[in-house]
Image (cartoon, rainbow, N blue to C red; front, side, top):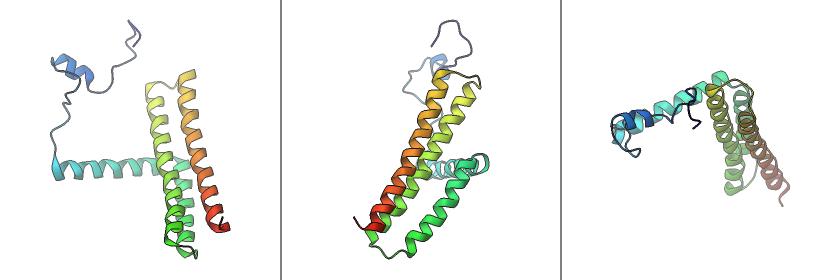
Length: 147
């Protein structure tokens, strides 16, 4: 943290914990356990999927591609293991895109100004999506060609 720079806030929840005299290992947001926590986590996950679909055009495009590819994998005459590889490679793209979108949102939340570190973070997230997409192509080619 840069001294005397009020624009940079400590990580979420740490300032509350410090003000309350607690240690950083305490989490004031905890409290729900068991099925309630599982239910809430599921609702947060669904909210994240809805947000990604609503605000991220790349995620929408990859969802459409995923539907087509999964349908193709289901009807392709390959072994169950090969089908699982094909579908898993597609699922990885969606997971990586969600993480990339989360990184971009967090970076934009901090500042929309151009900054080298912000660009680096966004570029790395984009590179991860590219690698996931290349993985889909390679897995599908290897399965379909039968190497």
